[in-house]
Length: 304
Image (cartoon, rainbow, N blue to C red; front, top):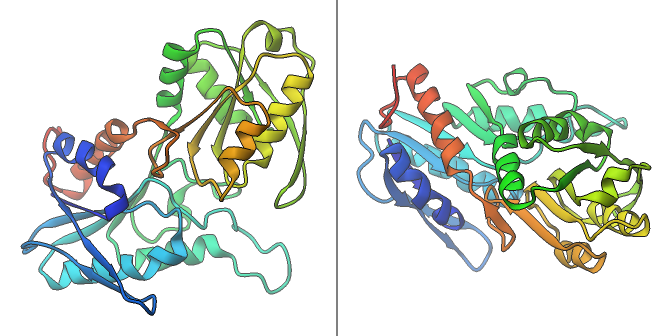
């Protein structure tokens, strides 16, 4: 396998490639003054199995460069071209909420499916889509980050009390709590706009006895976490630690959370960000080895 990384994902690629026994290359992405892109894939790809590594934090910016990179890899003789997208955008809009709206989740899935032979991602933001295979026309595999979060919490915050920001988070927060061996509660979220959010905190003695840890899969505006931090402090808890899988973080979001009184803000490295503290290369490599067996890809260390 040849692992071809988009430039911003080079740190994760350097950890992932040796684990896979893959040859690492970083593509060149030149931006013309008018905003157009020139993508260059280095080296010989004849008869190679190529995996592109790109996080889709900004899918509008990346969509065409991804298509150009995949098509160029095939023109250079690649046997298969897959996509490792630690963060997968455009999954939230899974139905039409108003007449005329585009249902972006299946549309984006089909768009990617036209260029790639397989996809691997970490905990996509799914609501009414049960499985990625329900919308993707190619093999699409979800990597679960719960064991990584649980391990970090177990080692760093042994007195943690886990908190999910809303009812939709209950199932996965419960799993992290189970793996970490810690109690959990779920907050109630009331959203009245993109940046207008409030939450309510349950009455629980456990919240005052340990360190509150707010878990979420995605933080974008930061308002949900900020409100949760404020309400917890109002309830008399110690300053909460905020842990997020995907650090989408709109401008100012990190400051919003810290200004609310958070003790610490932690994320995985699915999206490069200064808060990254939990690496995903191990679980990505494990999943890719398993996928390789089914697709007959040459990945070191796999078992048939």
